[in-house]
Image (cartoon, rainbow, N blue to C red; front, top):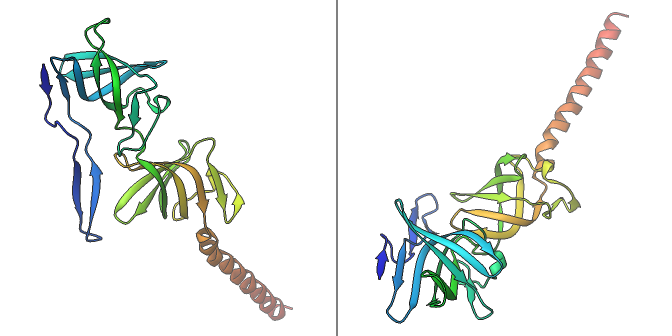
Length: 236
């Protein structure tokens, strides 16, 4: 049996960046494909994880109102990989993730139970990355902000364990403001341009930005002092 969607494979989409005269590479999630051969070998692309229990993953492939529910059994010999081939573990897989898998039908179980040889999670972060840029928006309630890097907007998400420093000293998320220059390191997912940060460093841009305010205040104080002295002498 062979059921295939519009895309059998998941190519990379290349987009022209006219601002930087460069090319931006963005992943395209796999289309639906279900292949069951006569010898029991199975290849499924584009399934969505519905639940995880121990070493068993339940996933569905859906075409309109028709769907197939798969029971995928992972063992110590099952290889689990991220989008760009990086190794992962079953503990990394989450409900809602888009996966592909291959293996063999377990003939002692239901018709769609598979002993998995390989599971690829297209939703897992692609790699560890460091982002430098200027903060464009801040969502304090959800602990996230956006950074413009070239022509790409990257969303940086902080967690309860994210280490945040400002000019080398411990800080917190509330210290981050629009126009700050930051450096964030963490797990980057190219498909959503999102970085879940393990470390965020705020550098000295805010101090530079506040200096004119302090200079303005000092100028006002001097002006006020001179004006009062002049007024006092004239009205003495």
